[in-house]
Length: 108
Length: 235
Image (cartoon, rainbow over all chains, first blue to last red; front, side):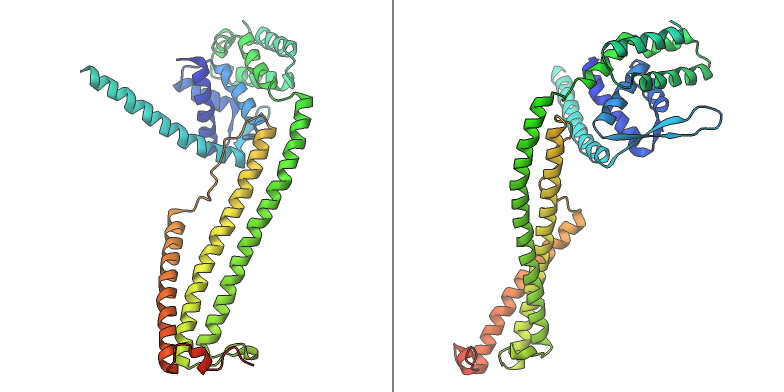
């Protein structure tokens, strides 16, 4: 799959994961790389971009037996943006899917 | 590539491309190594799965270079400030209109209560038979419901306009990072239904009662311009 295309969708995936609860970077990276074929390292630039855009905020939390972890959480803007983009994406995906299905039927 | 080699390479690439907080970024990758090592992966495996440090650094670099051209930004800020003045004037107008509608709702409610409850404060209500007062009072109360729904609408719109405006300013000044939000307020389906019912019924009831009240007054006074018979508008 086209890398640029995937990056845009990954942003949405990260927002979605954070909309459920706060997570630390490694958690997000693991979750996504288990399911989507991306290099582990690509999630961190995405998190940084989302932070720069004001969609997520970070805070440090002490963990027993280890250095403090950097947690990411959605901001109010992030939440609104996620809601809008999610709806937009689902709509888009539905259209593409029905278009591709049509094509398959035409070939029969 | 070992962990130290990878991190050193990444730090070098980030500094070369002038990314700020390189240390912060590197520490995030260092943590990634720590987690993965705890899961039993070797440093080489982890480094390979992360992707080339050059590619990672390039991704960070592409973030930083956006939207930071000093001169253009100052000009844009002045322009946006100029826009904001006009926007603020428009929103003040919207707010004033909402207040007018709200005041109308209160006034009609007060009139309705006075007519129905036979209250004649400071002799402001002209004399009429109670049957007429009751029906016209009820009509006035219905009209007040209509204006109350209007007040809700106008305030919601004004609020949403301001929200969109603020959002748009942030969007432009940040170099196009925020998605647009709708202009019309997003009522819940239930609120929308309630408002629609309130508006339909209040207008219908007002219309019917007003006509009925006028007709009844004409019959009771025995004259089309019943207000002359009851001595209204003369002091």
